[in-house]
Image 1 (cartoon, helix red, strand yellow):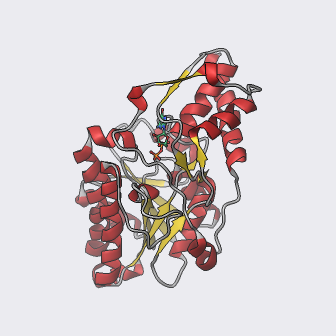
Image 2 (cartoon, helix red, strand yellow):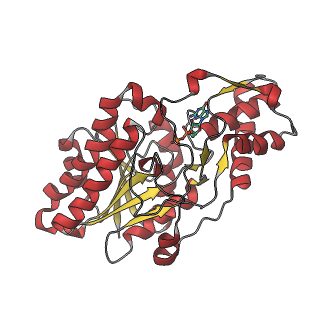
Image 3 (cartoon, protein in one colour):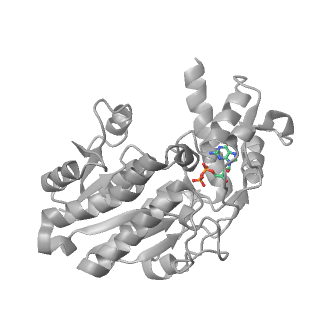
Length: 327
Ligand code: GDP
């Protein structure tokens, strides 16, 4: 039986990846942070067959313990403090977890497996935020990185450390440069989910307006359930490598609003949406669009869920979640 260890099981992608691996017959372990983690009930309810180990990306001892206990064939490092806007206010903790945490995980594997470390396959969740002030459109694996936030800088550190451990020690280490990916499990601080929750509440008469920041920012949004498949495929290759995972199509925040409001029968959303400087960023990323040619050609990966289907799925989910909460 193949065994996987996942960090970041309380985030959006961890449960999707765990479901995928369990469906393939894997033994799935995960690291979970802290005492009485408030997301523990969600993890237990969503993926009850995952074996949990307490640990923290900033504490290498706990990672070594988790690796020793689980004896993984594959390690997926999805753990990070991943909210870009928050990273300006908390740059040090973001760097410790999102950046230095990657090095801790890589070293935990090496300390555990010694000369055999290259038998453990490693996936690092890199991010399109590394492209920041984009140097070409669309962005591919070779595009110069120019991060625009402490979060992006931390992800660049993790990305290069993954490449460095591959080149220095021959580790089977891969970095997936994933563009924004969303789902009904997306955290409510991200703009798509913020919109889908608010639109559902407007439909149910629970609120009337929604305050947002920059409506002209564009992102390449895909479906998280499709993206975890790409992670798994990377680790099934003969060698570690780096891959952009994206749809290749961008939309603006206004487009998200169009689709979400249309779902509840509202064509003109202008009276429901205000702009608030609190949600503007010191340096925003204007247009992220990925070129996933390599993932398509080498991994045979392509996205299944399109933009409108994704936003519809999220609003539909929030209509039922919010109506349950309102009762
Ligand atoms: P990110 O790409 O990982 O930062 O994902 P987000 O969903 O947090 O943000 C995507 C884009 O939406 C960014 O360019 C934000 O500036 C823009 N945006 C506009 N209004 C908001 C808002 O109210 N909240 C968030 N999170 N983003 C917003």
